[in-house]
Length: 262
Image (cartoon, rainbow, N blue to C red; front, side, top):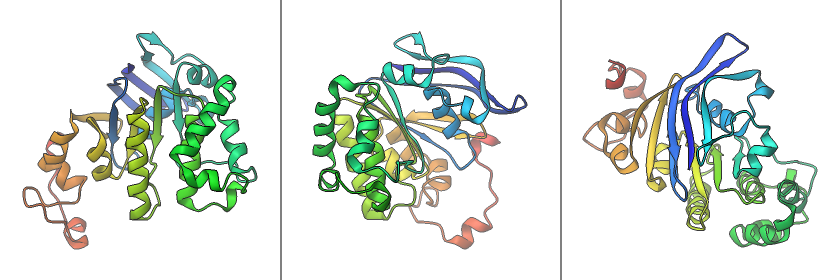
């Protein structure tokens, strides 16, 4: 199990970004972490994967654990070796490398299973096999997202952290990414899915958490979050109880506070 326990994170020694975050990702499950821009979702992933130093951030309280063993003081490569891999927002592929070269880079911490994992990725993403010799910078946005996910799988992770995998993609591609996440999970990889597309995330997750300004404000099974009136209204864009989508004018002039902030 991947556990985040009472986590606090400060940037630049003064900006408190996370305030007592606690949740877990059981083996073999999909967990959704939802929230608006600036809620702190990406900071949670950076804290788990050891990337806070790059952004002048520090864990000032709490722990991140895998199977009860703390990992939050380890270097990023050691965290990957413990089975935790992050696919960052914005794809971050090596644009001048070929598709296959990008994937092989992802196996640097697990070279012994590189060829097996490469075949697994090509089975999951047939388009990458077709494009294996193509320069990554010339791929479409959807293909680059698949490449980023495939590169993450090259380290044989137990826990795959996905940061906004549907960002900027057309609806048809969002559906493809959704189905691929389900298949990766079906093959045994647990997934922490950070998304603003709450409908997509909750449709495949077992459990969900909602963040607001560095704190967790809701924690329920995904099906219960989908039916919660506040979640429908503020995250799914639906009128509470009616299932009707809001117009832009309704959203622009809407004043009611979320119940968890009252």
